[in-house]
Image 1 (tube, rainbow, N blue to C red):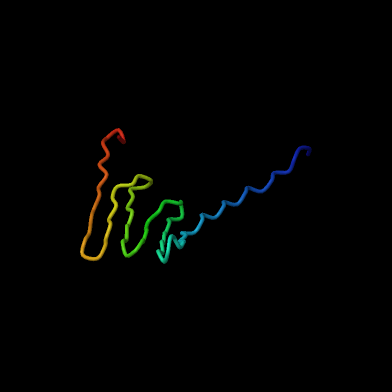
Image 2: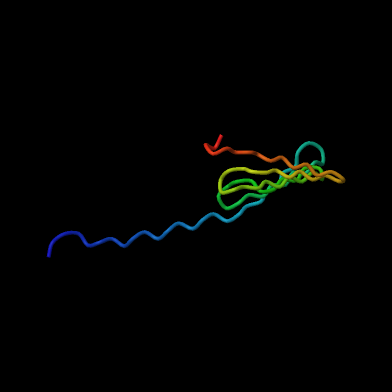
Length: 83
């Protein structure tokens, strides 16, 4: 029998794990971020203002910003054509 032996099928690459990071800005300002495994941001905290990002798959559908005594919800309406 001639020919090339079959090479083993490649193993799937592992998905990246969810990440978080923080950085100091000007003065003593601390900024924190959290991301999903696919790289989309899920959370941001800056000077006691927290923003949660919500998705439907890859499409952003809602941002919820919370600061002491205030909550602001921003909804993103998407039509049938994604516009």
